[in-house]
Image (cartoon, rainbow, N blue to C red):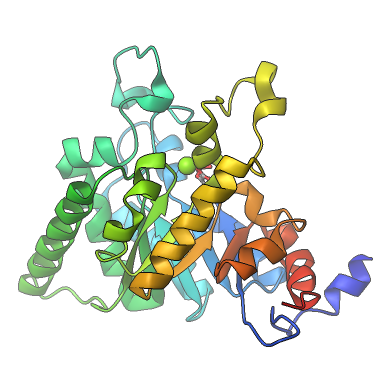
Length: 294
Ligand code: PEP
Ligand code: MG
């Protein structure tokens, strides 16, 4: 069977009636790029940047981050790489961040909330990311969005960083895409407004399932209730896709359920144009798309 899948390398994920789907890979470390290339993914749909923060004893410098992002972009040779800004907090803690005890960390001080609160950390990461844009096809994505105001603030900061880099004569490719993760019910409900602010949506079904169903993704006792095919979750995905379509932006899925081949036809039908999965699932998913007759 592995041999059969290997034959799909070099082909594209196109349905029988000609709809092209981008099949990307999720990575958590620059070393994972070899797996991405080995499995012939179209690009990287989610590069979790937390590794930089988890592997060091203090906040990583702009230069350390820049080198890591640059390496991934160069190795991907012009294929799109979507890098997600810091998503610490909740299940991903580092000692030096020193977050006070929280009763509900999943609903606490995390991700974009930390970045907008401690903007010096955010600006350091954005400078590293934007500098790396000169070395490949970069897209930047922001986690845990719940409001239009957050996105407007983010865009303001990004513009400021671009202006600073220009004034410092530091090279970057200004046309990189900006997107947000849709992983809270608030972002789904506001998706028509949010779609006017960004270039793309990427649906994080891990958190979206958790917050929609009020089922903790870390709680083994209720893991049977953690169901990404729950009709409420599917309606959330459908609404997001509709908002994206109306605004003319693209929408993908980068949570675990992107790899659920029983759902692929549904996703494609409602207008999802990108799926990002663990590298070892890329060819399997490409096969599933090639079998779809809409
Ligand atoms: C998600 O929430 O679906 C997601 C892709 O992000 P993470 O699993 O890193 O929270
Ligand atoms: Mg998430």
